[in-house]
Length: 138
Length: 100
Image (cartoon, rainbow over all chains, first blue to last red; front, side, top):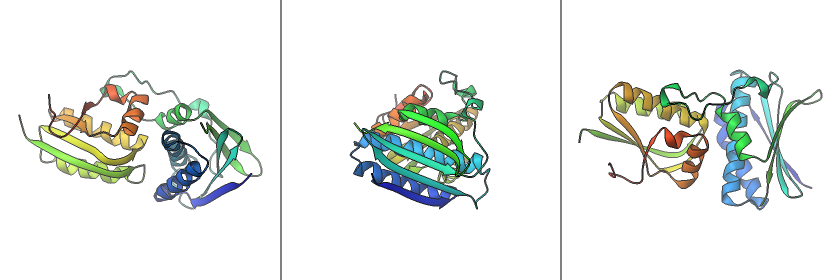
């Protein structure tokens, strides 16, 4: 089982490179265009949340994005050493609210959950915050 | 039909590029167009940060008494807008000049 990894600093300008990395790896794992798009978006939203919230705008943090194939699944792991994240504290977006009341906060996490088959956050004392996401390859 | 302005959007609109798009849209809004068209034909991706920019632009345009429409939205971006319920918020036009 081959695992691939990209390690970048906690800056939003790194998002393009992360997207390129995960797109190439997801394609190589045999995902179709829609699944590749979904994985890319989930990783982009997760990375943005990490940079903006876990690191709170600090640019000297590290973000590791790893991926591998596990049977029928394409698995992505995102690891950071920023502030721990509790997804239970993020309210679900109200998708039926009129435009005057629509909020975009919380939408990143909502997209991750909609686009991936599994999204799990945990804390690893040796590594930091770990986000594990799975997407069926077909 | 009043004055129309088009803002073409290219490539990825993620959290890094979204602020620049907002600046571009705001500079166009300064000319007070009646209809602002955001042309997504060449857009490859719009993240939630990009959607936030579109939402801000829509609200500002409404406050100024104008309209905002998305045109030439690629299917993959339409699908994402639908997942977020934004297809019910934005006026989506199929192609250039297809105003109803």
